[in-house]
Image 1 (cartoon, rainbow over the protein chains, first blue to last red):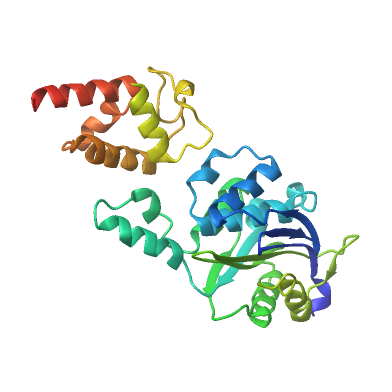
Image 2: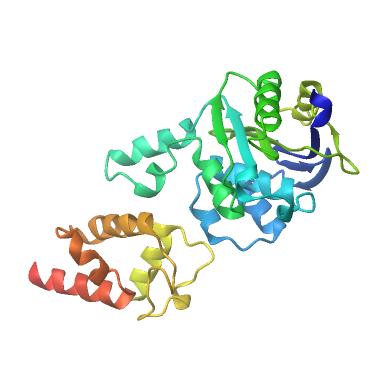
Length: 208
Length: 83
């Protein structure tokens, strides 16, 4: 069953390194997390002012998605509701929740409040690329490749989605890791079969 | 108005914008600076934090936050009232 689905591309961002399809493409060892995220944004040479307003979780997921799709995604192949997003992490939006609670002691920040849900990162990606397909954000203790594989396969085989961006996006304090996969129904030059083993293998790249 | 522009940039995290990029009479919302509804709330917070001004009537919002000049005029008028 899984042989009908393929991992067309992958992106890993962790430990100050950005990797695309298991190859390192950018590194900035000296930076703090906010500075590192801005340096990745500058490296990608994108003009999207809303990026600067996002919280760190959304910035990380949004950047990982930009890396993932660049040169590997043909939006013309799909209707807006045929591309979906399924993400997972362990700490939900806790990183921003803590910052938001701190602001409530003086004056609650509306700009922080809007990021006190983890699925906002899905919204930011969807707004940028006009995706309107099924989406979900799951909270798990650790990356559950078996669950992601099963959930995305179900969406694809029931023709709810033709294409899915899935994976792990986690930020808490200065710890962060994003691992995204582009899952499609056709085989391309460098694609590999969509299995939980291949998801784990890529997830463990630069494990941190 | 230069100080107000710097405060707006800081409050709204407009990282790629300099004070001189914002015209005194440039619309802040939709066209012009392209701010959204969350930015409007942040501008209300800015008035409270920096100028101790509470926008009591929500209907005044579009008029007050039309441009940097209208914001500055509102702040000046409020400060004169409370002087």
